Image 1 (cartoon, helix red, strand yellow):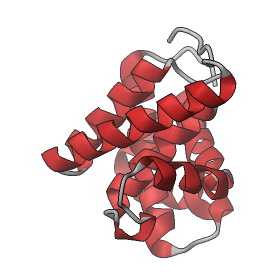
Image 2: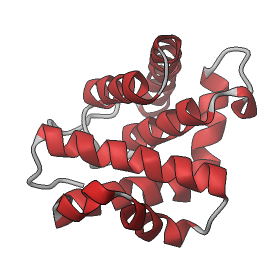
Image 3: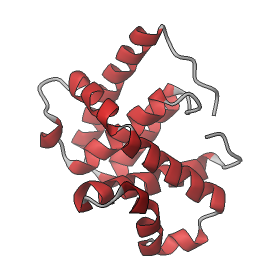
Length: 155
């Protein structure tokens, strides 16, 4: 996932990925159609560079492809919360962040969590920011314990 994008462009790619995941979640469409449908509807997408689009598409499709592995980790880390009771936007932000935390070429965990908090601030509520932070901290601790502390490359 390493690219020559600025941190701001990577943030924009994550925003696009969250929006793709949201559309997929509520629309129940085919995963392979998600990126094309998103970019067709996103007027700013025409200005998005090919590397930004590729990163966004890869994040969304990678998350969708691993959702069956990601969801149990979220549920195990979200005290007394069932996945289906979470707000859709919070759930997709968590899924994207967990995908990145598990990705061998992902950003450092602190960056992933900070980005998820920014996405929650943008698309959800202040309560969601605290919720996302708590769940992702618990997910990271579980991942760190399970793997002996994965090292992520610097962003």
